[in-house]
Image 1 (cartoon, rainbow, N blue to C red):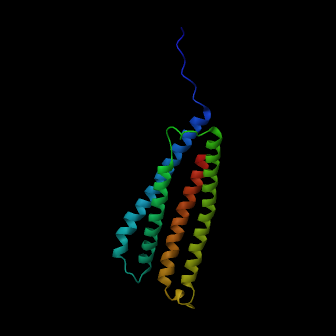
Image 2: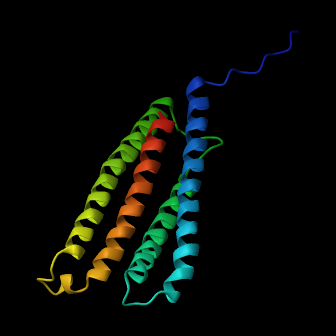
Image 3: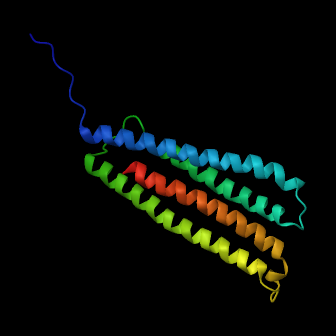
Length: 166
C-alpha cells in the first residue's frame, strides 16, 4: 500500500567505501611519483657520466621508482572502492582500516631511517677513503642523495596517508 523506502546504507559501509577510495587515490599519487622518477631519471641516466655522482643518483632513483610503481599498482588493484567483497563485515572493515593506518605509520618511521641512511652515506662519501667502498665517493654521494630524496618524499606521503585515512 505504501511505497517502501530504500534501505539505509550502513555507516560502516559508507566509511569503508570512502577509505578504499582515499587509499586508491593516495596510491595513485605514489604511482605518479614513481612515473615521474622513471621519466626524469630514466632520461638522465644514460646521459650522465658513470664516473660522476649524478649517474648513481639517477640509477638509484630508477630502482626506487620500479619498487614504488609495483607497490602502487598492487595496492590499487587490491582496493575495493565500490562494494566490499562477499562476507565482508563491519568488524573486518574496521580491522582493515586499523591495519592500513599501522602500515603507513610504520612506513613513516622507516622513511626517517632512509633519510638517516642517506645522511650516513653522504658523510661516508666526504670522509677519507679507508676501504674499497669508500674509494668511490661519487657512488656513495649519488646513492645518499637519492635515498634522502626518496625517504623525504615517502615520509611526507606516508604521514599524509596516515592522517588522511584516519
